[in-house]
Figure 1 (tube, helix red, strand yellow):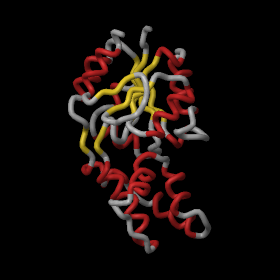
Figure 2: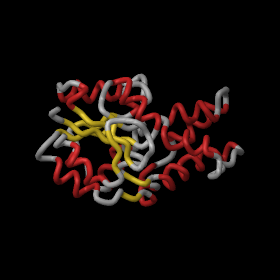
Figure 3: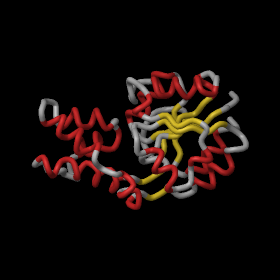
Figure 4: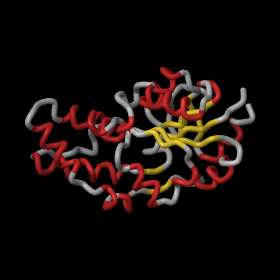
Length: 205
């Protein structure tokens, strides 16, 4: 098959953003009297894979706490947290190699912070389409964001690869019928890679 686009999730794939995301939600939870437990696997999974509005609905299912949490989230300038993010090894070099071969896109459950992150790391120039949770009614695990990327490039699902690291990513890819590449994760799909450069060999299959 001919691959015409490679689509990347952001957190856990493009970046190790664990500390930045943890700090973001800590700034919301602490004023509301909640403490985040790093050892709680369910909490960590929700924080780092779901869209902001879904995370806050999970922790604050009732009003007025949910509205207070949303207000606190809106007041955070994510640029203050970007220094806590670490770009994944080999990622920029892989983008350099890919940009002349395929379209490149981002499909993330981040919302308004994505532009600041791309700007800070000088990555915006690589991506012709950046799809965030704020641009769709239903973020991942729904297939809507991936559909939007496919529509942007006018390609079929089998002509793209989606690189993700979570079950949320895998479910979105499966629902959109886009081949899924698991990055440093034991998830079923088209392939698994442990280094970004390995994506280049997948284009030759």
